[in-house]
Every structure is written in C-alpha cells, then in structure tokens.
Amino acid sequence: MVNCQGCASLKFPRVFWEYNREHKPDLVGLLETRVNGVKVDSVIVKLGFDFLHRVKVVEFLEILISNRFWSLLYMVVLMVKNRSSYEKFLNILCRWMGLRGGRFIGKRCTLFSEFMNSMGLHDLGFSGLNFTWNKGGDFERLDRVVCNDAWILKFPLSKVLHLQKLKSDHRPFKLTLMPDVQPSSMRPFRFLADWVKHLGFSGFVKKNWEFLGDMSTTHVTFIDQVKLWNNELYGHIMHRKNLLKKKLDNVQKAID
View 1 (cartoon, rainbow, N blue to C red):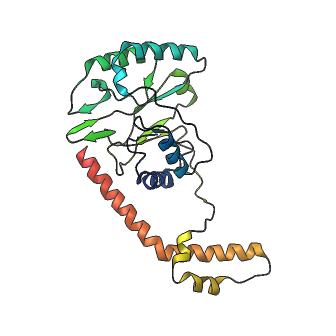
View 2 (cartoon, helix red, strand yellow):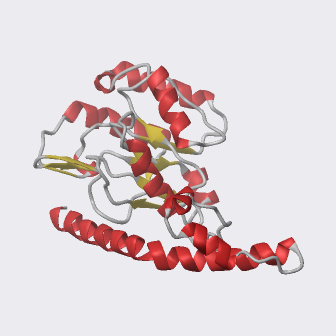
C-alpha cells in the first residue's frame, strides 16, 4: 500500500516497479487525493496490471475535521455485514499515532479516536522505521492499517512493514497476511529487450544456439547460457544498486 502524492509524475512508474520487483505483492493499493480522471487512467495503464479498480476522489482531507464525516463513515460501516479490515490513509495528527515536530490538531484526533473505539478497531502496528512521512523537520506516522477482531482471528500473524522511501516524502508499507509462507524463488524466464541492443548479443546467440535433437532441450540449454551471460554482464549493476539502497536505508534510519 502506498500513500503517494506525486503518482502522476513521469518518474513514478519506474519507482513503483522498483518496489514491485523487490517485494512481489499480490495486491497493490495507491492513494492519491490530488489527481483524478484521465490522468489517473494514464498512470494505471503505464503500470501494466491485468485487473484494477479505481475509486474517484470526492472530498479533500479538510473534511476530516467535521463531525459529519465520521458520522457518515460510522453509518456506512454499520451497513456492511462482513467488515473485516479497514486500511485507512487518514492524514490526521494524534499523539498516540506518533509524530515529531509539526503542529498538533486536537479535534481531528478526538474524532478519530472516538471512531476507532466505537467500531472496535485496532491498529496493527508496524516494524521498520517509525515515520511514514516527513517534510523539513516534521516527522509523522500518517499511514497505518487498522482492523477488527474478526481480522485478527483470521490472520493472527499479520504484519505491517514500513518500506524504504524512494523519490517521495511518503514511505509505503507492506501488509503480509501469512509471513511464514515464503514466495517461490523460481521466476519464469523473460527475454530482456536490452539484450538485443548489446553489441555482443548477436555473436553470443550464434555461438550458443544449437539444436540438440528436440526444442525443449534446446530451449533449456540456451536459457541457462543466456542467464549466465546476463549475470556476468549486468549482475554487477544490480549489486551496486542494492548496496546504494542499503546505504540510503541506513541514512533514513539515522534521520528517523
């Protein structure tokens, strides 16, 4: 889940696929309150998913101050029979939510706390760095996952991890329902378009493509060779990239 102001920017798809490549989520949620309509559709197309659902922005965050918002939200929830998890990105400031610097807005906090208590909701907590947003000297935990008792009973091992910030003032998070279930490390083979642009690829194909009696064996043998060639040629780039990301993570920990 990402609360990502700026998802309509040109750089966003590249940053998004960096997260997607590393964490391999089954479901992705993007929240952006300041972009709507045609621009949102163009962003969705660039991300390349087969299935999607878009919800139109109807109000800005200032309405959270009003009692009307919380009363209406309470009524909506009561109408839903099988409510279980509420992932809310409510940009409100409250002492128990965790913040450093900035200003304290008491009315929003009171209304939010009353809603949580009346609905029997719980904050799932988190691991990782403390704050999900910062600007200047202000650090705040704006983004969280809240759930009810039914959710906790069904997914008792649920975990929320605050991820590294990349080119944004917001930190995305990852919700894992069953941490003990590890994703398969076997990824399907994919032909990379950049290979064709490499001056040595044509010669590599001529040297390593050889029919071995049947196409299945021929494909498997060639795939093994091209994977090895790719690692030797581009592997050091990914290694350097991962080292830089670790250094960036250490810097963010020091700032937090």
